[in-house]
Length: 66
Image (cartoon, rainbow, N blue to C red):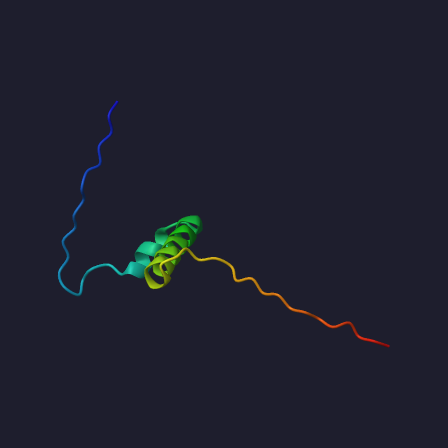
């Protein structure tokens, strides 16, 4: 059984289109978080040319002498 995707187009008058907020509010929390993470990774790729990583921080702590 072959499945196909149908294109859906909605026309709205200027200023009468539904808000993006309403669309994202209907989406699940998992979907919203995964989309936000995908956008964050795309942003880092465009801005820095690399994938985001954690910074490594090293501290040298001198022992307290009593």
